[in-house]
Image (cartoon, rainbow, N blue to C red):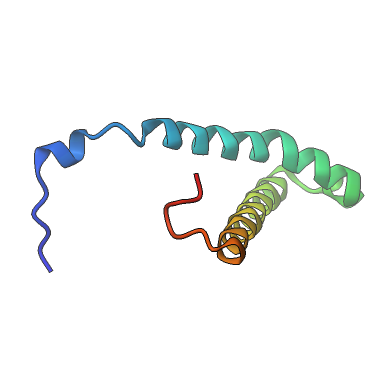
Length: 87
């Protein structure tokens, strides 16, 4: 399937605030939330080498994001809100 994309499609900047919010959220979870929660509930986290802490934080953010997304999605399904109407 060939899509006919126009220059206007690439110049649409309406999604930029959402991209910035997404990036800021990821970085906040990655740099602040994950280490704080991990040290509190998993004391061994503090003794991991830096490379393992990076891997741990990445997995934490991915799983947390997935849980948040599915919680919102389930709420929209249970309340009858259609796709794109969750705002």
